[in-house]
Image (tube, rainbow, N blue to C red; front, side, top):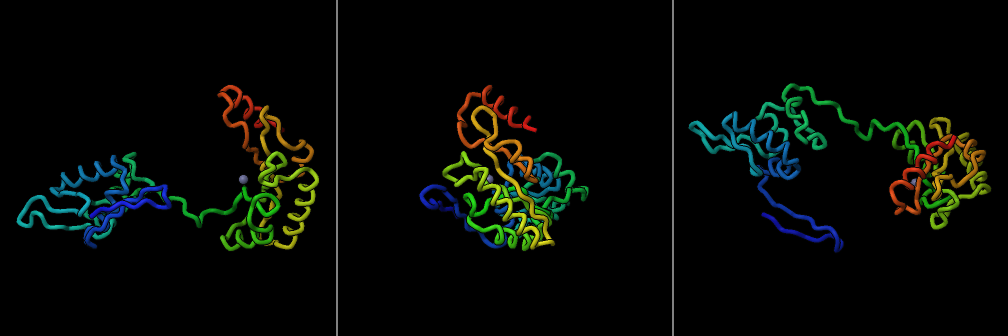
Length: 237
Ligand SMILES: [Zn+2]
């Protein structure tokens, strides 16, 4: 049932082919985690059932060996008296009890995201214009967005110096004025220099709505220096 392929010469992917009646059981089994699966198998044993990658089977009674679930994950959880558990929660950290009590939390989903405060445009190393980014954010239902180019130290990313940033902020403000249904903020992803200073003067940064500070170079600093660098950046007014 198993074969392996190497994708793009880098990543190995295992392919498994199982009967349709075992699809959910195989998906559940290989999704894990191991701890979560152990907890499920213990519940199965207490109910005189057996859970494995092929399905959920009776372990006692006249129909011993009969498969009672396995085609889909929901059926397995239901037969064990549990609500379906989202894969992100399968860690045996209380989710099995919560699933039995109908008290699983609602997870965030892409529809819950209201905005994005970090993006680049063709002004630095992005691939789309301000206008295209606004259209894309609007299509996602966002209420707000911030355009945050790289600053001048990021030469390979076409980072902006003071003059180009001033011009770019003007373009962002003009675009914002044309689109009243979404809040378009002007920001920067300013470089944290090796000593913790930022790559643009405070007066320039103060004109922006959003400032993200990122270390992009000298990343192999020893721990103490790296920590002092980040603390100094954080303390920037
Ligand atoms: Zn960025």
